[in-house]
Every structure is written in structure tokens, then in C-alpha cells.
Image (cartoon, rainbow, N blue to C red; front, side):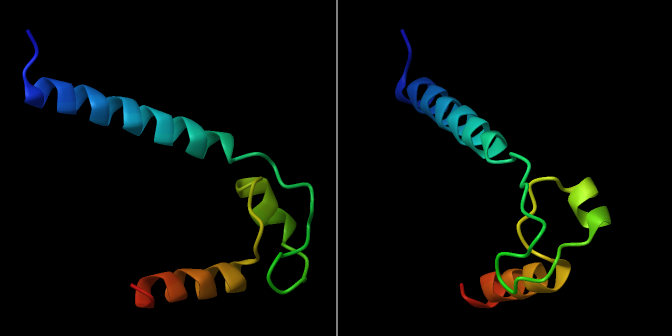
Length: 71
């Protein structure tokens, strides 16, 4: 018979798998070569390395800075 710790571990594992599956499905290649923040073209090398990227390096840096300081 499973105890509470086993049940909790199973639940956490299922939730983690669901989160990872949904995260991986978000990595669909972005056909738009323009940055969604500034509208400038995302360099081809960046799009080749990260096909799902939606922002240029500068705008991504700004997003990351806001994320760190917003918490």
C-alpha cells in the first residue's frame, strides 16, 4: 500500500512530465524573421541556432533583466 510520500512523489512526477511536454511543444519554429518587441530583423545565425526565437538578442537581454529585477 502506498503512503502519502509515495502518492505525492507520483503526483509531482506526473506534473513535471506534463510541464516538460508542454514546454517542448512550445519550441515550434518561428517563421517571422522580425523581433516581436522592436520589429528589427532577427539575425539569421540566431534563428538558425534557436528556430523558435521571437526576439533579437538586445530585446531578449532586456526581457531577462526585467525578469531578474521584477521578482
